[in-house]
Length: 394
Image 1 (tube, rainbow, N blue to C red):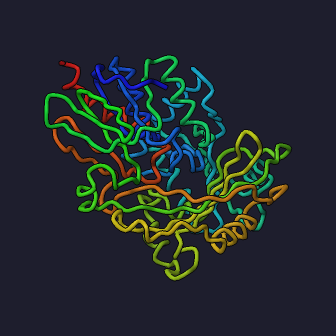
Image 2: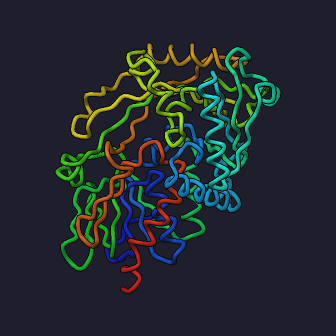
């Protein structure tokens, strides 16, 4: 943690220490730039710490899969430098019917074309490799050996620590930036506690906080916020779950499957008024190092300007539905729930991510949606290549 020094001018100021902001800072540091990472909380506590920690390029469309595959390399590089909680255990998609199995077969063909390794598994192979799968549910699977998982509660914190200790990052927690002026030769920021920062360039990675900086820009955007319910079981270290578990509803939801030939026909048969469809529920499971199992999730949406409409309640009906569905898919030693929460992330309705340059020095990058943990390292690398070329000349 650094103390603010108003006399220091940074090459890059990054506002927001979620996973997208962290990796903008990381790639700028790797290129030799000086960076201040400014976070309104004592440590990141929003969507980047409230997710499954599944790093699954397999679920993304062709463009974003390339970022996700690069992210796998970056996460593994970081793990070789310090323990960021990465576990190289792979991901499996489990089909519950013939339609989902057909989509897995089509995706495996597409994976071969894109040279992204995957392995089709028979029902028997799935049940042998993942004995906790319910036999009545599983019809077959598709396994991605190179994919990984992280414990989202600690990964962001550990990456920030590594950047401070080994890369020269200046991290400023508990600084709420309330003013940003890029009209002069430098970007000038002021935080609510009076701290001031100056830099050649600034990137605002504000997640779903649309009130403090540039609210008019966000009101006119196509940004929306998504509320997700999630659960964590009590630790059960004697039961080890191999890999990230993605299920039939994920096959019917994820972007990669939309590029499969039969996807449109499969979706056309689905009921549009079911409880699961109304709340965007699909079931994922990941086991953390302590043996606890994270499961979920649901999706409720509101425009950025109306995000208060989503409310602050945890809906136990949604949680019960997810639990009951998960029990039909998987056998856990214990279904005792230790914690329940919701996360909020922002995404765009009509584009993949929100990028807006206020001017040549001030840039907003947010709305990466559910792609954040998987794609941010690779995406931010490409962004820094674009944004900081001009700063290098100063």
